[in-house]
Image (cartoon, rainbow, N blue to C red; front, side, top):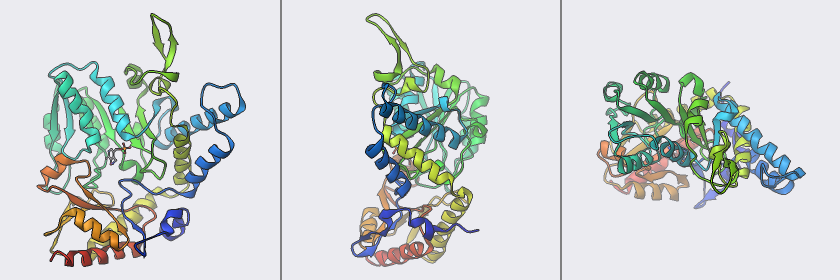
Length: 404
Ligand code: PMP
């Protein structure tokens, strides 16, 4: 049965609002998704009924909150096929990658190589650049083809005995390209490298099994997965997490502390210094429960059908340049309009109630690769409808007329 987006919209209070007197058409979910009532209510309920700091108390509210926090960890683990001890709560995808890079970086030497790709988000570039600056490691950049695929032959040619880390996006936030994670992990492991996937986009659009992929690390954020901001997941294979030094110090990440010595807690708590994002973890757990009750394959098909509908609607638009055109992609449309700055396009679309993103999308190397300084981006989520896809096509066609 086809996925019923109209019915699901009732779960999202914000979607009934208007913008500039027009119904909101929210096509910016790749930046951050809207929140279903289940998430909003789970967080409010915790604050209204059962809230305290976790792990420290002997009183009822502390115990209940700790149970809810750890239950969220189990939900996140089950969602990606991991053990619960392999799931670390972070404040987002960015922090998760920084945590891994800082930890691995401690044992890298000058001349060691890290392979990234031209399609990475800055979150999966800058932490590795730190290691280039601070440790003298060498960054190698896998190319992206004109169609927006990762150039697998070129990627393979970069791998060798010096490759210590391969850090790649599972799905590009600009191109929508979904990379063959399992193959990439196998190739990386053949040369003994550690492989990290940035799953911030893919987690939303595909069921993920980190064991089937054989990822050493897999990271994603809560806020794109219909959960709250301020929460992310770092999955690490048990032996990989065990080998990582702590990232931040304080709070519950210790074993014991004395004036002369310190021991650390086992993962995952070793990486959760200070009061963690408790409410946000509970909210993410609720988002995962909510999403798990839906047919995720049907959702992906629904989103792709909206993307295809928009492409068809704009088929005759000779003023449009689409960036990222591989068939192996999720429902993200990045584009430029001839003669127009992407920011102006986005601002005009906003007058029609249509929310899209414009800029470099935190992917400046990719913008350079495609010879543009910025692009606009429409991203489709489970709550978008065919009417909204059509409204976007109409609004964009009208916006274009301003620049013709
Ligand atoms: N990687 C990708 C591919 C992303 O799209 C984003 C979010 N824009 C991030 C990383 C950063 O994640 P977060 O917002 O959770 O820090």
